Image (cartoon, rainbow over all chains, first blue to last red; front, side):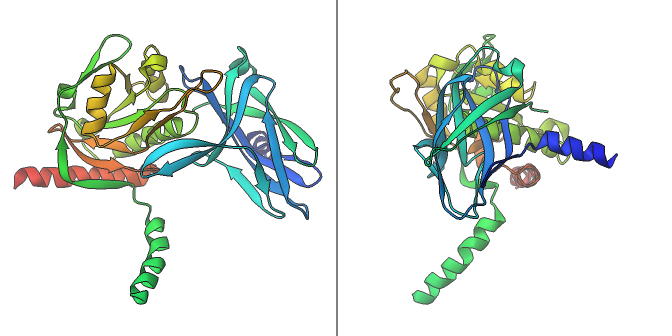
Length: 139
Length: 197
């Protein structure tokens, strides 16, 4: 039973570890009908000794990808594009609803059916990491 | 003066910890006549606001973050509210798209995705603007980028309209389900008290 729970927990919260980067809590919520824009949420931890900077985000199944920050000013919400994401040593940067997200647009037709969205992060130092994020259904 | 300032500085984090979920309006705002519609041609007008509680959110379907986040949370908040109030006081939820050009045919299914009873409507610019103005809301369609996509800035709060057709409060993010339900239940009690006086 314990093994089963551990396996289920692994399935629910996939984690990817690299030399000094850990990607965790990644998911893409299922989009409502009529929406052209998907969002991906995740957290990135830098366990290394130097700051790391994400300079590129892409997905082969989406035509357009942006890193966005939802800004609230005077009760009005708008999105600000960010061209990089700096993760200081020992820190975790979390992309979550109402904060930062990866906006994914122009999906390939079978994205929902695949249930997974491959995401590629490119760092300033040239390192590239790739992982598959599950699409999370509403219920 | 310095003392007051430092007190304010001290209090600020406390206030934000309290996480205000709603703000009752000092002066309820009467909603004027307007006509919006869903994809089946069903209308949403001023008369739909009578004799029931209604939560209205403005947004657009291609909003990747704030709109789905709010709609998901409203679904949970309404479910919580239904445990606290009489069945006929469980609020209706209406999503109004301020982007009819892109959303006209899809906004109804969009809202139903979050709950089968949620309504999704839009309409003529002038009609949308009437409701936006009446609820003290705001939106702006941004300039399209090179690929034709445009973002839409919009108010993040949800308008709470009472059975007398007057907007009585604003719900604010993060729309915590239990706290929002508590706020709505209290708002309904103070509304009924007001009717008695």
